Image (cartoon, rainbow, N blue to C red; front, top):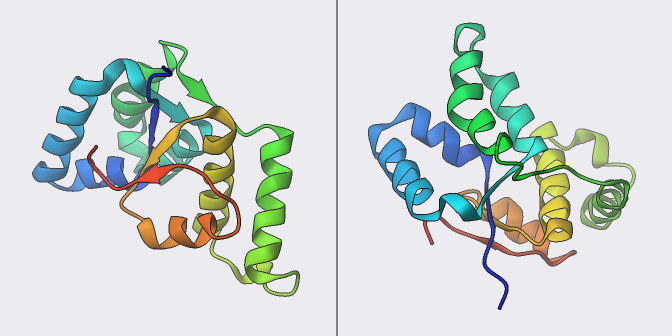
Length: 145
């Protein structure tokens, strides 16, 4: 039997930074599942880029480096990028893809890289990921399993 592996979407880390309930829920999940937690390079980029300049080091220490030091990171391969392109083309077509929010494009790439890595995405953004899963299946669940 293969153990479950999880990747957390950026929105769950943001919830933890913005509310004590979010922080408690994230902390509880991380403590219970630490060996099964993986970090997407996409999520790391979104967390760091979205942090206030004075908070970047704290975000890296608390959310990025702790997982990266254990080597539990994954990044999209060329195949994941091209699969994301195919999924976007099926979702919106050539003429409309440039009008998509960057966050949605990142979500498609995250979904394809989770699929490729065999990681279950944990997210509160079910609407977008359900939409993506209609054109390319991958595993995702709401918080907190």
